[in-house]
Image (cartoon, helix red, strand yellow):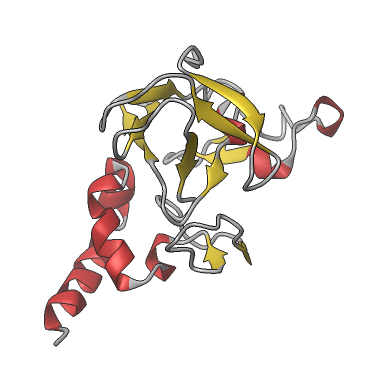
Length: 175
């Protein structure tokens, strides 16, 4: 399920382990096919003794909660990400937002495709670091929301179309 031939997990200067490109990827290229096979529910709870932790959960558009597998559970956040998640027919892929060189850490913005998530002090050290991170697309500065519109997962854009239209109207009304 998860394609790991083009990436590997190694210690990260950002936090813990990170995912790194073993090869170059072109903008729009598929880095990973995400493995959403491990459902987390009352019949299949997390097993902390097996390393399954709350922050390894991911939430699918239909409300299903899944356990992120390796290597995707090691992808670190950055305020200047180089990849994003895109869904097609209940399958999710990690795509390159720009060209990625071999050896570069694979980074995503945890706020994309998220609302009402956690808040924490960001340590991504990117030039554009916001300092404090909230996992909520609509809490990003307006400029970042506009910049990231093309990278929203289609389901997220569809579900939140009214909110997106509102901020687009407000963006056009700005001096």
